[in-house]
Length: 151
Length: 151
Length: 84
Length: 84
Image (cartoon, rainbow over all chains, first blue to last red; front, top):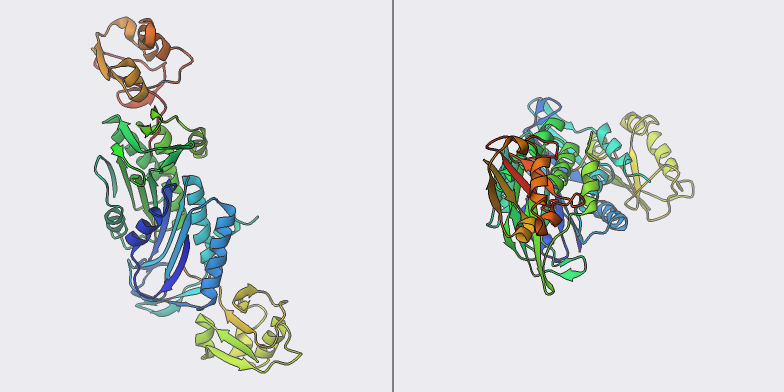
């Protein structure tokens, strides 16, 4: 079973993984990616970050990514949880958890989902630094990461 | 910081991840692999599994794998926890958690550690099935997975 | 009527998150809407200039300037995404 | 003295997990130890036959039959590993 959640509140990493891994005794592998806020970006201290998104489109874009992952690999379940609103350093931002019978597919699908999310889901980060606020620029390395999955 | 633990007791997935991700505010990515016991293997129902290992060598072999991961990628911390003794379906068997500033390195290092563990760490699984006990055979796909990392 | 949405850096620079346009047969593509916004000049002219990397979604699906637009559509403009 | 260890399928088939051998100059390699075990015949002859995939570790490091062995070493024999 798949689930996509956008929320302002913190999420419970442990509860999400526990629920997913117990869903099916055929699951042999659970791969989880957790993205969290760093206190430094491009050399500057970041005190807070605010995540904006496009309600409606975000859910659609993530659903399309999850559907494609399920087409490409044999999976038993995916969870995508993304926070929006204000965040502090060390706060978890995004969780992608993928369950499968075998580890190779779980690893590939998990990395695929976060790589696509980074370039295709409408989220924008604004950083608050001692020098003022700034919108985070898209990273070339994220485009490269996405390109690898093209076929 | 890295940590390798072999234990008969269940491990606390949430506590291990939480401790690792909070270790350093420069951590942007935490990738976790959880391997758990399936109730079916090669078409047969498995009711229990017993994991044997080679105390002393196990820790050395895992330390060598963790050291090599740290040489190959920029990481902030690795946790490897492996259970031995009797296990039931849905029981977690092994956890590999890797923290890094960036996700690409965390994904690669995590998959590297579990791929090497599967072929280089002295653990052996014995399955209890309705048709009797049997030692699990090494899988050709695990050898292939390990080959990918050779250089 | 066409609903326009602006996000992030664009929303802040334009000082608006949304507006509505009356639909007309000339406004039948993303390119036509961009041309209209660009023609407003000032900050609009700058942000919708040809060399700016502005992404577009029609009815919440990513698309390009060739995409056609019809009465009732939702057209969103935003900078390259930076989530995750 | 050389300490021999056997694990998993091997331990069960041989009905022993360990034994000690007196070191002698002829027992100076993994190959020489395997030859000695094979020469015992019966289940030993079968399990240490050349076509069996038995892994070897000397002092807890994976090695091959060329590896040399000296007084006080720990030599372990086991099937391909299946953890994780």
